[in-house]
Length: 149
Image 1 (cartoon, rainbow, N blue to C red):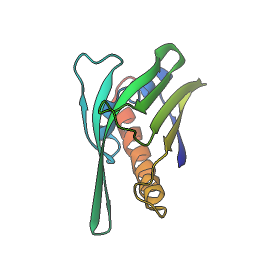
Image 2 (spheres, rainbow, N blue to C red):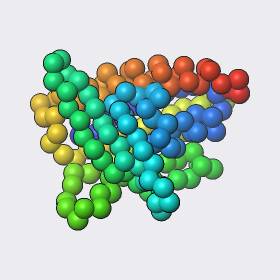
Image 3 (cartoon, rainbow, N blue to C red):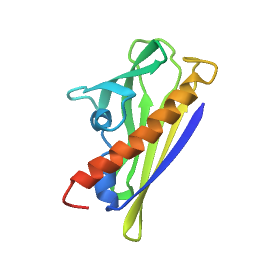
Image 4 (cartoon, rainbow, N blue to C red):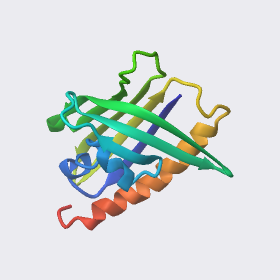
């Protein structure tokens, strides 16, 4: 499954990138990231991420260890990939974000690739669609709270 989302914001690329280059900041704007805990001293930087979603009366959760495998602040590019340390084979999760400056605003392009079978039958796509819509609104609110657009 591949999901693409984008956002245009009335701020500089550095400001927008500062909210997407650290998974620890994601719970502030996207509910799917229920809990994110940074691993101290991990190189490359890594986070324990708990994803949680409710579909009607059912709740599903998934725990992942994600590493930041690409971090290019000057190019406003970041990639996070699932990297478990239990020796088992796991479905891939890859999240990338690229921010570009476009005149007086910035543009965020995100791509999530998931190669597993959790939440089959289109459920994950529906949940992600709702999360993306709500997340865009909340991310825009976070950007608007800052006096430095």
